[in-house]
Length: 163
Length: 261
Image (cartoon, rainbow over all chains, first blue to last red; front, side):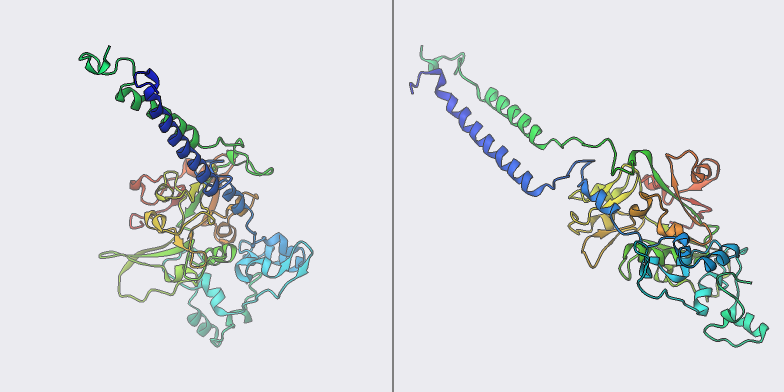
């Protein structure tokens, strides 16, 4: 090219443009490889993660689900002072016991007839609200003339509807 | 004319270096801006056909005067969310505050197996339980420090972790001033309370709220004018944990003592 031509310097621009295109190209390639599909759908995170959290299984299904098979226990429990104590609090999550889709029983529900179960809520602790019913089990059993056996509470109290 | 000998203008009809750099750099910046701009949100806040997250904003209310420290919430949370042994998405702290001296604070196994009576000679005049969960802060440090965008707040106010995207660096675990996060030993990613997102978006309560026998834990929806939790927040004296940190926690407490951090 004529060194006097005003276009003599355009080659710098072309070189820079090619370099820029290469940079943009590699950026786009990198983005398509590393950025997840739903990135930025709702914000600076992977949008699909929200649906994945929603898709996790529900395991505690509530007292009404228990009543589908155990309506007598449900009615007795709902009428007693333990009505606010959910079935699954003592027995554990329902999904371990039954499949509600087909009504099939999966395994026996744990029935923990132990003093420790009652004491979780009713053992006398000074941090508990004073109005909440609490008991020193040893003292109580001595007063009643009963032995301190692992399931002593259940000789007198029905956990579904105590008293 | 010989340009090189012209003393007034070395390159009168060519780009000066300054002009060249200015024009190319602005073009490059423009191109980068086009490449890097985030894709626009496709949905108007609708997440699933049956749930519109723009019409909910979840909050949590703890009544410390009601909690009996039975640990049912901790056990239910573990069962509902497959929380690994030794890790806690929720836990119960016990405060035993003597008339003089240091307060005794303990949380044996997060309160999961209940509490034993305190055997100390302290003259305890004030004692209570404080259930803790993730505060789902509106201005949360945990999502701010995440280097890969794996921690985020949903539009309905829940702080979640993307298990697929998290690299397990643990910055968020350190950033949380409430100790609400842990590294899951099975997945090696950050994990935390999801406010049972799989339940609350289906119209259920969180497992801990569902199982609490004394109503010490409640789930509220700020977008629901009939929600009783909103009535409590509007009329009762509530507090949040460490308000001085300005994290805007969305877990509110009734009956919080100044000893609680």
